Amino acid sequence: MQALASWLVLRPQNAVLGLAVTLLLPAPQLTSGVIMVLLVLAQGTRLAVIEALIAAAVLLTVSLLFGVSIVSMTALIVGTWVPVLLLAMLLLVARSLTLTMQVSVIVTVVALLGFYVVVDDPAAFWQPYVLQMTELARQNNLQLNTELFSAEVMTISAALAFWMLYIIGLLLGYALYRRLPRETGEFGRFRDLNFGRVIALTLALASVLAFLVDVASLQNVAFVLFVMFWVQGLAIVHWLHGQGMLPLAALIAVYALLPFLQVLLMTALAVFGYTDAWFEFRRRMKRA
Image (spheres, rainbow, N blue to C red):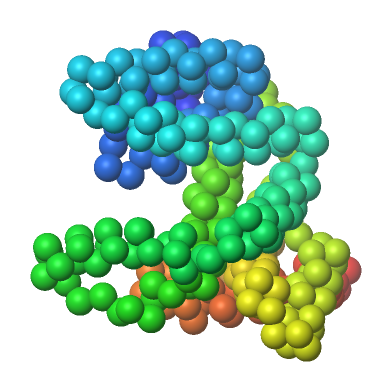
């Protein structure tokens, strides 16, 4: 990992190649996002943007040669690189991983509310995507659970999926940056992440209002905020390991079980993270 980070940072042409190649892979968004964050933190915003523009030009040229839609490729580039670029820039300015993560939560919630303001009929908005997935499943002889393709589920899933994609890119890129064989900036540790009582209070208020007025948008905001707290729960697990209270095998087990017990484990971590936002378990354990 350290060698990979050094290879990307030492020479701009390596960075351009890395961004261009990873965006052409089957699952490019995460890897490209990680590289973008690493370049911004290690080389500065200006050089990282220049490298990204060169990589984008290479990708668009390849698209023309192979008959790939320029619009689709441009949308992929913008949707993959711009959000993580902004997060990395914010991290450089704020010099706080926790503050950057908090801002990402707020922006996601605002975007979710903005979606309901702009889109009058979410069901009609998601219908083309549902039809595409249904057709794809039919071609591959797969059975789809139609309940998972309701407008509310699709909206929530999209908000959480994009948020997770970008913050994982931020966290992994920052982790690579910290492993560079030279002096790096100190922006905080993931194990100390705390979304804070303001976001926790927002979740509580949204939950109460959603119950009183029965508005779908408020219900979705409350649900999205609650799920986001699983990342804070995961940070606590890392903190326990760092303090010697949890063996490495247990930390590995949490990650290994996530794909199989996703809903159960993420719910447990979200509850743990949410209660920590109110009661600050880590600070109390340090005092003890």
